[in-house]
Image: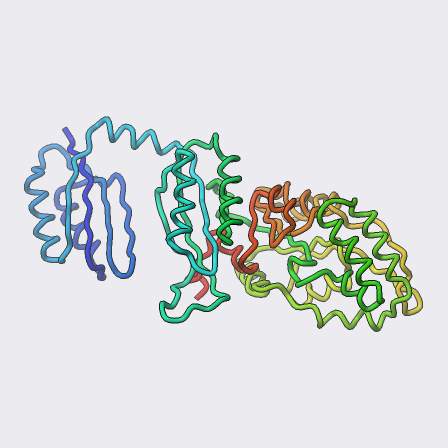
Length: 403
């Protein structure tokens, strides 16, 4: 009868350890049922679930591994695994698997304790923990640093909604971001990112800046904020705001092109997506003149926004239809995905306002980025404390992948 053991090695890591240890296993014709390794600060932790075939002596196998471990300055332990425990482990492979991503300027023990407590309270188990961000200096902490830890957890998905709510509340309390997503083949194979523009790709709203130039900043800002909170239907709010811009000279409009900065991490994110072969789109309730400017600057593939009607060198105050509102954004996203032969499950949509909710809702991953409370609570993911480049962690990109 086969004998199954969990073998654990720990100690200082160095090249060649795995080769030397597995050579001993191979000499006893051992079958490796499972294997996992982690290295933290050059200290190795290696576990193997090994099955020794009939006819092989466990004592000889054990003595050989102990001798090799002593030679390599490793600690080794052996735990026999009963058939019932092995059967339970095999059956557990069919459990739901999720990814929990913790994002912050730094990750503290308190952050890990709070997040892992939620996971445990909902009956899920942490299978793996990995740092995706680069190594932070112990001597110098920069306020714009990114820190990210990814946890793979397994269990029953019946409490998924309540877990999301608990993570959202904890993220707000701790001023970090926590993403919770089901582990699927699509998570690792996203192909299209669609962005809102105003307050998502750029700092602020173009229409608000135009209003300041026209001397109607306060009036337009009130309507904008109300629309973003979902209190006024977008098309109505858009018509009201544009009408207030009547008479603004085109030369003043063009001044905005170089005066509104990109959001932190926007260039890094889009540059990386382009390098990886992703398609990108801007779907904006703002204006084409600015969206097309960003398209040229960043190399965006698709741009859909509203035209600012200018007649004889001044803004007319009239609105051209169709207006790109929330429903139109979702429609355009479907059209782009169809044209590119991309499943909506492979789409990431990013926005901050209520008019972004329709496209966030149909995308495989909808992210509320530095969003209004209604949007944060409704979207499946929310990122509020880091820059746009942190979204790369949510699709599994590590800092070291980019170095």
